[in-house]
Structure formats: structure tokens, C-alpha cells
Length: 233
Image 1: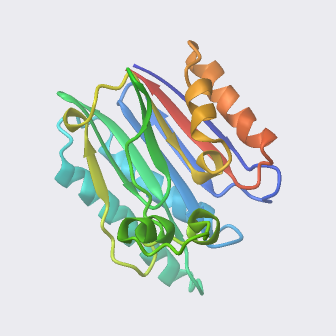
Image 2: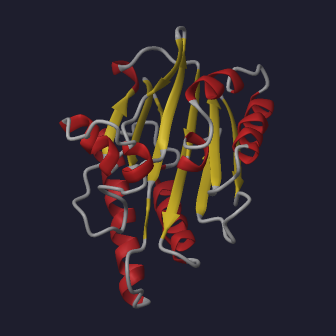
């Protein structure tokens, strides 16, 4: 297994509120995209990552254990907000990928994504927890409305947010075989179209692919923090 990670504040934002962590030895990768303004978002994403690193070294990782780790991160962010009397919303998205003894498992909350490279191309393995996706699923979209533009950044759930927490789990044995994975914040997925993602992620060298993806997001304007983790298995 090989991993490569990149995180950049982008060209507009003052701070980088994303947080990434990955370990080839532990077979675990975590990416969180914080929100809340100033440094509150960075605190939320860091708390989430720190809580979930406790899963490292557990090759018997089950959906229940993964969900418990996410729930623990959610509670710790809420506790932090209460202790520091932070007004307004402080929260973070999260996407987690872990190797298990029989393959891999993943989970996510919010609009940070997991992609897999399959024999037929790049496949999105998660579904955004956003108002835009909810409207698309329910058929509420009015003709001519760019739903992603208007509602894509309105999250329906996130760690620390005052909404019902319903993380989604992806089990490796239930999806097509993937040789490479991409975890990313919306700073990448919103800036680089799917065709370009598929082309750039295919570089033989994992570090080169990570650099190319980051550079593409920066060249597209770098309007948000940009974070990604690539995994080869």
C-alpha cells in the first residue's frame, strides 16, 4: 500500500481549515473540511481527525466501530464549542478510508468525497450530504436552476452541526474493484471536473498524481482550501 496527501489553503482563504492524516502502516486515511470561520473550522477538523486516528491499527474495523469513532468525534466537537462558548455553527465534514483484513471500509459525513479508480474509469463512491443532492434525489429541482451553484454548499449534516448525524458507510466488497482511491475536500471536487480528475489521477507515480490534482485546483482559481489523499492498494 502507498499513500500521498496534499493540503493547501488555496489562493483566496486566509486560513486552511482542512485537516488530513494518513498512515500506510496502519492502513488508515482521514480527511476533514472544517467550517465556522476564523480558526473554529480548523479546530473542528483537527478534533475530528484526532478522534478518528484512535481507529489506527484495528484490522478488524467494523461498520459499528467506524460509526462509533465518527460519533465520538461529533461529541468532542460539540463539547469544544460549549467550553469555548462559540456562537454560531462550528463543524466539519469527514471522509475516512481504512484497510481491513478482508479488504477496505470507508465512511463519510458532509460533502468531502471518496472516489475509486476502476477498470472502467473513475467512480464516485460517496454521495454528498448537501441540500443540492437532496433536491436532486427528491426531484425538487426547478427547470433552469443550477442546483449545485445555489445549494451545493448547504450541508444537510456535518460533525458538530445541529442536525441529525447519519454517516454513510461504504463496504469494499459491495463495490467494483478499485486499484486507487481519492479522498478530497470540495476545494478539489468543485474546482476540477470529473474528466480532468480521471485524467490527472491516472499518473503512474502517486506523488505526481497528487501534485497534478492540487495544481489543477489552484489553476482553476483556488477559491477554497484544497485537500486530498491518494491511496494505491
